[in-house]
Every structure is written in C-alpha cells, then in structure tokens.
Length: 125
Length: 335
Image (tube, rainbow over all chains, first blue to last red; front, side, top):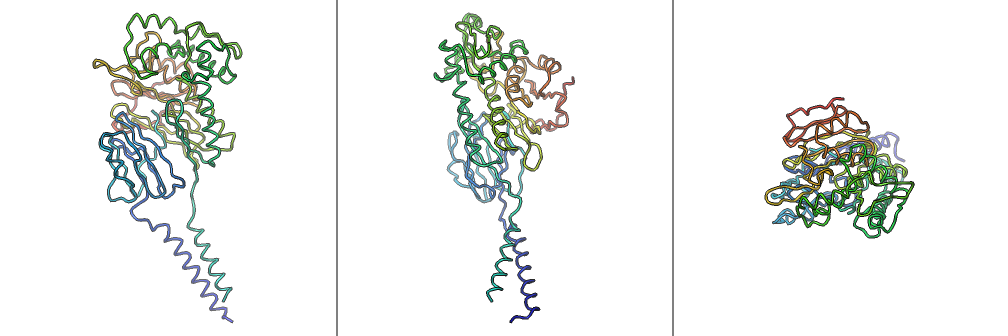
C-alpha cells in the first residue's frame, strides 16, 4: 500500500507536469504561422495557417492580372497565375519565414509572419 | 499500481484539453457563376454552403441573358411573355430603381451594351447613327408588369446583370439565416454581402479597391449589409488611345463620363445597392448627392477622377481612408 503522503506528492507532480505542458505546447511555434498576402504593399489578407481545416483556394485580382492562391494546413502557395514568367508558381509551397513568395509583375507578396497585418475581411470591387 | 496509472493518464488528458481553446470553425465554398468567381465563407457546416451554391446556380439559370433556357432569354426572344414569380419581383425592383433614378439605371440598355462588344469581348466603337437607332430600343418605362406577365415591346431586351449579384447576395443571406447561420461573408465577384457580424461580435471590415494604383482606398465596418462597388476600371477596352468602359449612360449610349472613377453603395438590400452603384456612377457626384439627400436606405463612397474621396454623412466615423489616401480626410456629403 502506498502511503497517503506519497499519493499527494504523485498527484501534485502530475498536475504540475500537465499544467506545464498545457502552457508550453501551444507556444512551441517556430517563426509564426500567419501568412500575410500583400498586394501593392498593402496587406489584403491574413491567414492563420495552423487553423486551416480543409484546403481552399482564393484568387487575387488586380488590373495587372490574377494569382490563385492555395491554402493548406501549415502551408501556402501560388497555384496558378497569368503573369508572364510564373516564377511565383515555381516557388512552390511556403511554410516558413525564410523568404517570401513574390510575383513581381503583379506586385503580390506572400510572407509568413508572427502577427496578422490585415484585419480586412474582404475587398469590394 | 493500475489505479496510479489510470489517474496519471486522466490528468495528462486534461492537460491536453486545456491547450485547445478558442477555435472557431468555418467552412468555405466557391463557384464560378454569373461570369465571375464567387467565394462563400460561413460559420456553419459544409452542407449548408453547398445548398447556397446550388441556390446561386439556380438563380443564374433563371436570369442569364445568354443561356437559351433562361427565363430572361425566352422573354427577350419573344418565346414567353411571363416569368416566374421570383423573377417578376426582381424585375419590379429593377424597374423601380430605373424610375427613381430617372433612367440613370436602365435595364433595357442591353442592345447598346451588346453593340459595344462588352458581352462577347469583340470590342468596337459603334457609330453615332447606330447608337441613335439602338437608343430607340432603350426605355425602361415601356416595360409593363402585371403579376407574372411581362409586356416587352418588340426589339427591346432586358438584362438584369446590373442587379443580379446584389439580388443573389440577398437570397443567399436569407437562405443561410433560415438554416441557422448567423455569421457569414459572401464575396460574389467583388460584390460583398455580410451576414450578421463576425463570431466574436465585431463588424466585418470591408475594404474598397482603389482603381488608381490597385491598392485599397479605404474600409468600412459593416454588419448585415451589402457593399457593392461599380467603376469603369472593372471592364473596359482601349482604342486609339482612348478608354471605353462597360457602364453606359442610357441617355447617350456612350460610356458614362461623369467625373467618377468608382462608387461604392452600402445598405441592407443588396439588389438596391447593386442597381444604385451603377446609377450613381452614371449620375456623377452632384446628381448622386442630390439623390442620396432625397432617398433613404443606403450610404455611399465616391472616388472622383481627381482622386478625391467623398462619403455620405452616415459613414462618418466608420469609413477609414487607406493606402495613398491614408493621410487625407474624406469630404462629407451632408443631408
């Protein structure tokens, strides 16, 4: 039979470990999971990549052209674009903040950062 | 020993629960319809959004001016002289906006728009004689509705394109609310319709595209409102160094040249906002200000060709200039 005192210690220790894990695990992010989409220097959309459940895509249109962006959990890419060189498409998936995806002809940049830069929900046009 | 293990496991699982909080789930659906790309975002489950997509497709099949099986096509080609009750109601709404704007919006403008090539992409500049002749077919006051019967004089054609997306926003919003959705954002080819507010109770922040430079000219915060922008920049062609856009002035048959680059109309009724965004673009700033002072149900943001922003009084404290306009104060149109 284990003594009551030992039980108390075991339970308290387990609580302490649980509490510590609850606090540490969510903040174990690397460089940020917010993908900020900039058009012409203005952040038009901020997406929390960690909260994405099912993949989806959306299109950014400007008078210079269109880029269709694909969003999956933890990563983002330009799926298709009508720019002359398609470099933005060839850059593939972006999941870290080392370097952004850039579509120079359309002045579109996708960057992974720590905080959302845009609180804009939609653009009326 | 077993009891200890079970207890430890139970406590560790609780730790896992504590780490999961505050996730708000939403679903997205998109569809190509009405010659544009539509995105629906709702705080609901997937099946409700799929229902909304089907609703959009059914509206398009009723109203499309190019689909041979649509009610509007059959009306225009003389095959039918009546439409469904829903279409008749929409047509009545459209005609009442035409009447109240003294024809700045005219849903019988289709023969002229078609002559310019905006429907097919084969752009051309019609001659003065051709336009004069076609303008004889443009007169919203000649269209009669009696119940679901429509009287459309020979040669005249109706196109509800200037009001269809706004109407669709109203219908989808109603459908979503009937199905228990209290928070959604619809982007119907650039026509925005906000259903309720965001799940945290805050208003949806909708930005307006700046045709000068392609950025954003400002933003408004809305709950349960449609936000519709019209501007020549949306569809135009160039010939001999001159730009010709798709918003035609029904009184001249030429692209509306009223000194405005874009008009954004905000209100509870999407069909009204859609129709008015075209009408106010044609009317110009002064005409629009007069119209707003004598009518209710909407607010508006104007960008003049000189780059100045004007807002109606109801948007003071709500409209925030952005981008290149961030340091300016919008001029206010008072009642």
